[in-house]
Image (tube, rainbow, N blue to C red):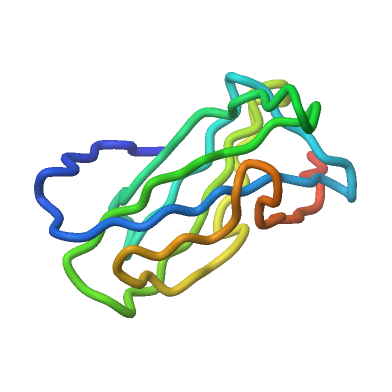
Length: 116
C-alpha cells in the first residue's frame, strides 16, 4: 500500500473507528493497518490499537478531504498473514464525520484469502 499522505493538503477531516472481522472472527494487532483511499490516493491510515476495556483491537482512523461526498475505499493489511485485503468497504466522506467509537466501532467483515 502506498501510504504517502500530507494532511496539510486537505481542508477537512472526519473520523472512522473500525474493527475488523475475518471469517466472522474479530482480529487485530499493533502491526495490522487500516487505510482509506480516494481514487487510489491515500487519505488516512492507522495501525491497530488495543482497547483494554473491550479486550479488542480497533482502528481509529482520521480521514482527510477537500470536498464532501467523495467515495472512500478501505484497505486492510493483516500482518500475521502478510496479506493485503483491498476495497473491504466504502463510505462517503462528510466534513467532521464521526463513524464508530472506541467502545462501539463500525465492523468491517471480510473473508480470508485462500492461496491455491
